[in-house]
Image (cartoon, rainbow, N blue to C red; front, side, top):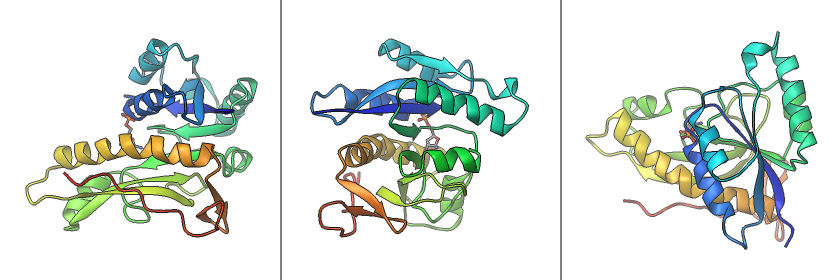
Amino acid sequence: MTRKRVGVLISGRGSNLQALINACKSRDYPAEIVLVVSNVPQAQGLLRAEAALIPTLTINHKDFPDREAFDATLDAALKEAGVELLCNAGFLRLHTPGFVESWRDRHLNVHPSLLPAFRGLHSHVRAIAAGCKISGCTIHFVRAEMDEGPIVAQAAVPVLADDTFETLALRVLEAEHRLYPHALALVASGAVSVQGERVVDTNDQAQAPLFSPPVP
Ligand code: GRF
């Protein structure tokens, strides 16, 4: 089996990166992480990558005059490392349209809501305020608009009556850690693909199946 060469972009804690690192330890997993890039020098996720002996790079956005210059350097580093698939995992920078286009349908993001609900920041606070009974997380292909793009997989969790931001965020984060490795495997193995801005089963062109972790 040839494994797809994956680059992971982070800005902080890196718990989703850790979930991907753990998944890649399986011999039959269809991807390997060949580079982790952080735009924040002290990101905790860099230590996780180093502990797993994965090459890391810090490209500090503060060292660049604009987004174009930052993204050009990032793009060059990813190509230099032979990255085939890119995963944003808590990466807190917007990409330029040119960067997004050059990684089109090879670039995933994790968002802590059931998109298209609650794009942007503070999704858990907004889900609680809206009285949602269910929330969750989404893995989607990246497009130029923030938190937009074909949905690869979603996982739902309940919103409980006494939930705070923290308790809901933790429940969703645990779902993210199960969902992201699953979604990356679907994409890396070629089991799913993008057709007309929807993600379909590559073999029968039907809507890709729902993934949902067990409800606690
Ligand atoms: C996650 O909740 C993810 O959905 C959001 O940022 C958070 C990153 O957490 N985009 P971590 O750095 O992976 O721990």
